[in-house]
Amino acid sequence: MNTLFDIDQIRPEHKVCESRVEVPTIIVEPFHEGGEPEVFVQWFADFSEIDFLQQEFGNSLVEKFEKMQFRFPVPMLPNDEHWMGHPERFKIVLFGQVQDWPNKAVVSQMGKHDAWILWVTSSHYGTETPSGDGPACFIIPLHVMLADQICGIITPKKYCDTTVLDREMQIYRDMV
Image 1 (cartoon, rainbow, N blue to C red):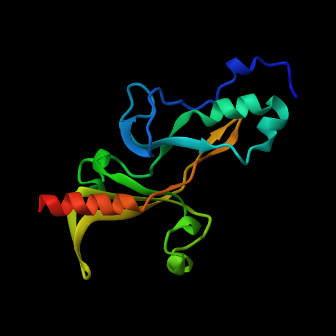
Image 2: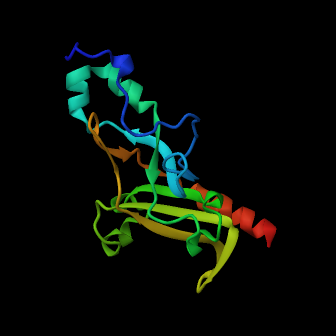
Image 3: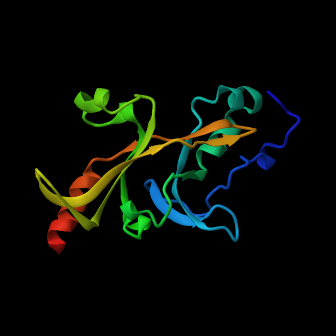
């Protein structure tokens, strides 16, 4: 274990969120002070695959990093028509890889299994489909991950909660 560093002083290069969220959350803010607003998902990173951190610095650094939340970039501008002007009104159903899709029967039709995606829904906006109407819902392919000199590639902790769809459907129906 490396004892040349004060573990309390080691931090990832990327901005660590000051406030915490209980579920992955869409946020809109500039990447840097004075910049244009961008869309991010605030959530925990998955450091379980970064063996080098544990080998070099021990469990205490890994545990410290696992408590941090980061801003993972979403490759859509805040004013993209899919957001209908308000990305923050969307709830996250799935933040993970195609292979994590809840209906395993359709995974083979969705592209590369290890590709990262973000599945969002919002009861604020309705859509009509052949099966009926309901809250707006779409998938965003994620092509950008965080890179860090200390941590390497920082990937999000996977998340999937299909009950978000049920809750948003109920809110949508109550509003209509």
